[in-house]
Image (tube, rainbow, N blue to C red):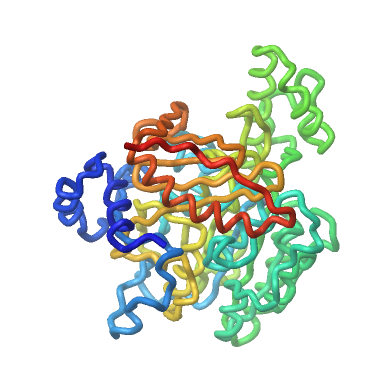
Length: 497
Ligand SMILES: [Zn+2]
């Protein structure tokens, strides 16, 4: 384990205010940087360029409970999510599978015809630099629901491994379990098996509807979710209903009225699973112009899915509002991961940890929430502690994630896709993102200068990049333990003088 000074130095270097190892040059700048986070309550996502401040050690070296917390000292730092009135009693969690952040007008900076999503983000508390912990449903959703990264849960789903051996333990605390213990009635409506009874979620919700094993369209999810809400509203206990939507996930099957242009291209049909598979396979042997045509088709079909989802969301909110159920309900909106639309030679997700697949949407909204746009990097593991804190349940110390507020500081944000033949890690810190594959491939990007991650700056002689690697290396070493067949990562050959 690194000593405290080393840890501090590494973080200070990553601030970007000094790119050398000269502690004398770094310390004064860092100390002066240790000011409160300024939360922008007016600006939109453009305000996301503010640099992270950073001085906390990584979460894995600072287990919750080992340090004084506001609970210990009797102080309570106000929660990030504030209301112009009483805190809502009920929670409607809406997770949208495979919703890419830049598919929304709020983030794209141009009209994507997603007015409902955009309204929730603009009028709610949005986490504008939010990142998933992975790029596929099971791994990603567990971080959002547990308040921990997979490695910190002690359970890392392995993509492609035997499914029945990867059940969520009944002993794991998920947000539904925690709210259930605090008197809320809970229900899950999801036909993605990765968030369903197949994987053990039935131990964590009072009620669960998984479509009987069939994938359901959004209107069916809404119908079932509204039934639970109606039932719970007739009782006296507060409730949490979690509705998971599969709309933008492949195959892209938006209702016809949302499709602009041809719904098949070059003989490919992305409305069927077989069509998606054959397009993925064929892409690499196509000419550049054919690839461009196929990519434009995928982008159009995906955008149509998102527009359709936006309308479903509007309908859901209108129905809840008409019934009065929205008056005392906090909406927690998040997406498990994004989607690659041949941005880097692949379709769908689970492929890589660049922004299009692993950045995510997260926001809170209620009728009288105070709009706030949080500028620091946040992670899926922060959602559960932030929700508990918002509801006034302040015992968050079992979490690795943070209950977000105006005083949190920048920390490294990790992501992981564990897969037997191709595991990938990423770490974000300050302006930097490092990605590492176990075959030894290393990529480094300056997200402030190059948000599309086009220029790989990797330099094995660079001291700052080595400091970034030192944040990632312990994650790599921990991940090795989660293979059924131990595998040996090819470590980078650093040559830092
Ligand atoms: Zn998913």
